[in-house]
Length: 364
Image 1: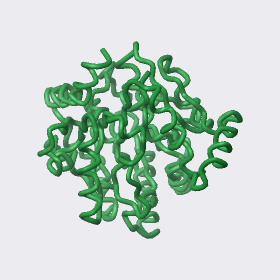
Image 2: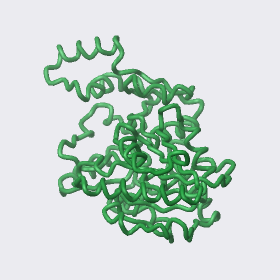
Image 3: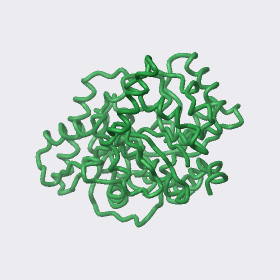
């Protein structure tokens, strides 16, 4: 059995990570912990055992732990339980994405018993960070890992002297291309600009962002174009932003609000991107999928991790910082200036499989 650690929050990008790794190793039994409300996202994955942390039996176990251990953390209660069970697993895989951003309450995961079993950390980026202490702490942390594969060159360069570190393009670049078509509709992938506290944004950015996205919807609908406003993570506020945009749309017959998890599963979302005409991508993995499926794409940069990836692949199209969203003009949407060449995309997709090169030796 393999312990699978990931960000479980009904977030499309992270759930897609989990789906990809389980499909790559169909003969491996993965075990993952999470809350009951997120379980349905993974019901179709046959080789994944999802242990519900807030079930009645688990609540009884948590109660016992709290009686034995006075400083037992009920908020992060899965950690002591995973530490306790860590000896049951042959390997542990930490598929992390943007986990390693410095927050005010950051913890030393290298002190956890499960981490001391040398996990495989794959598909991550590092930062943003504020203190040298945080950077140095994670030099020691990554040294304990069996491997660390970064998804951007900037993060890799911070730790490139370490023998267990490597770079490969984001895991989602390696998703199966499938049947790509153009059904003429537009996708606006939305994000809550305030979702990451460490970015210190104020509400004025939210209002400008909502008004700009609504104006694009209205412009496209006057041309008879169908628009899908797509939310990747309701709990991080995407759906709230999408609803505000919808309130400012003049022709709701041509604008549809799609929220991942609300009857829209991973396969539906992938198909939606495969068959669109253009993506205005505020979410990181909306940008990745648009590029993978060779769509016209305008990235809206809410986090520098998007810029670093665009630089890594020599993206030559327009992109806009969310702080300067007013610079995005309707002319940018309609000029359809740049699509990544398919030969380049295929090369990126092939390189992205290097995230799994060490796991392939163990799990295949």
